[in-house]
View 1 (cartoon, rainbow, N blue to C red):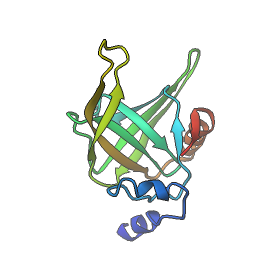
View 2 (view 1 turned 90 degrees about the horizontal axis):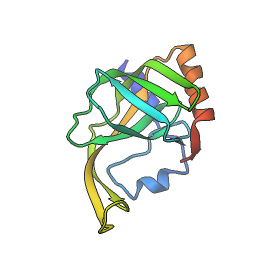
View 3 (view 1 turned 180 degrees about the vertical axis):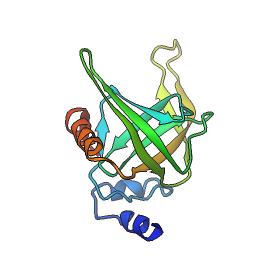
Length: 156
């Protein structure tokens, strides 16, 4: 089992490797093309320990997300659900088995507060988390392809 997992992490040359040098703690390991999702796709962990998560990108091999630093993201193997919602319909992918790649990394997230009178830049501590999918059933893989095809903004 361990030997199989090591082969899965061998990185193929990818255009985003140059961006990984900006953040030395991140290493490009994905063998699949990554995509940025629309803001209408949500992540739920099982057990529900992460209450607020922003999916940074997704691929057929896994996903990266950010959560608030005060929430302790799960470690090891667990399940996630994806919910892709629109005004008149939604798609829910349930019980996707995932494995954490590394320990979460604490990063500072900055945002301009245009709604605030002073229009200052506020910063928050967030946790960067990366997961890879394990043992997806054929209907889950097809659902994941559907989400990537219909709910993405751009390739990373």
